[in-house]
Length: 143
Image (tube, rainbow, N blue to C red; front, top):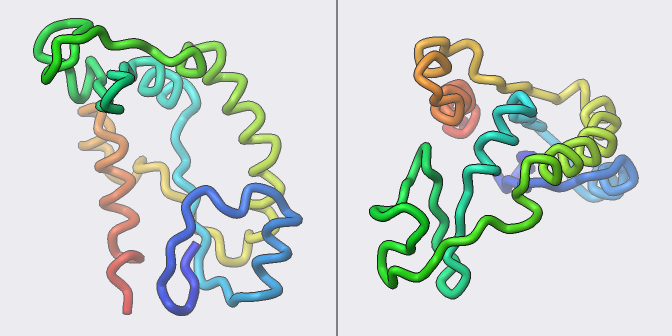
């Protein structure tokens, strides 16, 4: 969400009551929704591996470790967090959608949706994040 002083709130508000409280205190210019297919989210999050001691994050599709299953700096094992298991991710997404749909409806007059589908050359290369950013960038550069 962009505010008049160009603040971006990521992941807030999550409920309509939070949105109403925010509306009472600030004027909202835009609400951005990054519309990524659920199974793409499941795939990306389930592919995330973490080195617990440092917090370094790896993905075998986007940022693989030099040696499978081991942290690049220490050689210690990587783990997948329990909440990154595919079924857990799907449950989290279901909860998110249940809470978010009403918030998106609340902001329908200022809502901008970004799926990246307007940049098929990037989608076809499995680069949806880049496609979404390309679509979103003009809004981020507005003065």
